[in-house]
Length: 76
Ligand SMILES: [Zn+2]
Image 1 (tube, protein in one colour):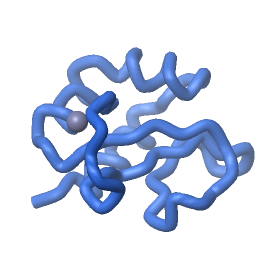
Image 2 (cartoon, rainbow, N blue to C red):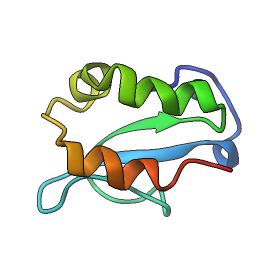
Image 3 (cartoon, helix red, strand yellow):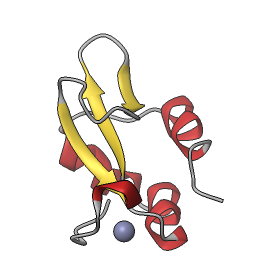
Image 4 (cartoon, rainbow, N blue to C red):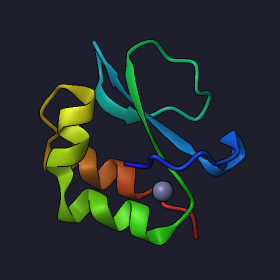
């Protein structure tokens, strides 16, 4: 979860979709409640340490499978 005002190119959008749960949204255009991660490793690490923050922001529960799929998008 990121509250920094970074350029959109540095942000990864996560979206809570009605049909597919919480997924990464590369287009930034999917419908649903969204949250952003920036390209800082600490931002992504907070996902695994405190997934509840993201769950609260997206108003849903996030499964371990969803977290694992999201983690694959972590910037190198
Ligand atoms: Zn961040």
